[in-house]
Image (cartoon, rainbow, N blue to C red; front, side, top):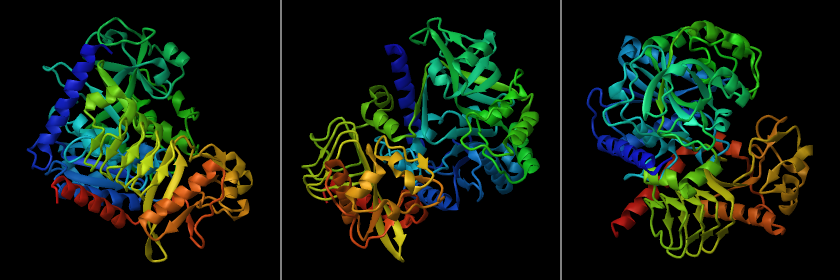
Length: 579
């Protein structure tokens, strides 16, 4: 991207942030902001957690006032995907709003799921991840609202569908605006290398609409491809050639990939009818692959039988897809080509670290700070990110690390490329490089307990084996889990797992001791991790109950976790005032 394009992107992003800042904490005028901000949750427990946090944010005047903030949980039972969440959210909105729904401008943010690739966001939700930006500091919720702050005044009633863990930045000419005023669906499209297209949705455009020399252009989409191969992109006519202007692909070829889309009220009504027809869902539906592939004049039914991108195939999936196809067939798919735009994903630990500490373009475009709403962050912390934390002056945080919602006492240090979240690190303790450490409050034996989980940043928490007999195949910090157990004086057979007995993973392994207070919890888990890395023995605390990350979420004490954050906020504010 040229310096001029990058400058446009930065200026446009800062202006969106300025606009949201002007709305935070005040009553918005009709048409100035969303009528409804709806967030999805995986279950009732997550819904309650989200509602409580949103309520606190409104009370602290961190969000625009006057809009309705709603959280909708998926029904109990099988996973239904973000497409199923969309259908159930629309149904609940219809039950609440009735006929008034047809007049509302709604943003629907998919935030369900348990964030297994970024566990620091599992308990409180990835939509509430703190960012080193704004005063008071932004969370992902505010950033999403800021990036779309211009949309409500330029759209007809309908629903904008987006995800909680990605960020889209774009610039357009001052005299233009992104408009959502056409019938059917309208999607944002970003020029991307073909390699990116294989993991995203790709738009096949009418050749007459391809004008990448303009900063923004409206186009019609012939069909939508979901995670296609490069050969399929070429065969379908999705590949475009660069002709100067705003694009600078290394090989001159690119495709337009998806991010966020809008549906007008009539399209939303079609989906409401679909849920009535389907009844309770028994399979996962993708809000992108299963809805958008049915749209456009060249859409065909063949995709409904392609289950290569499905994590768990249910018997009803093909039938449900075909019903979606027949219901939506003929509905227009319009595309807004944002030729000066970027798409960032923040859903994994590695992505989170990279974008907040190393990605110079992302940090400059958003104006991210190395430290935000924190105390005593001095010269010994460079190339890192510290948010909502209290550090003693003698602390050291290595480059590429993120410290959030934590306290570090005198002489504590954090190695490079690590995440320390919601922890109390006692004097002199050292967190190894490449470590993930996160403390959760849990309900244990009718009391509040603390559990500090630890993993390697690159560990695969989703990988599972069929039984404890295969523990050697699970890797913790580069060591087999069986070897780790031997360092802690545990037998393979004694290790318990939560959840499905036929699916043993780091996520469900009961490895982490429950302690009576935050500091001792961190120290106990750090000792176990250091034993693995040093090859020494360090048994878990005697008689301590052991929990898995999965257990912690099921038994989380949300009130206590938020109370700790409030205490941190109070201490930071008092330090800033010199009290």
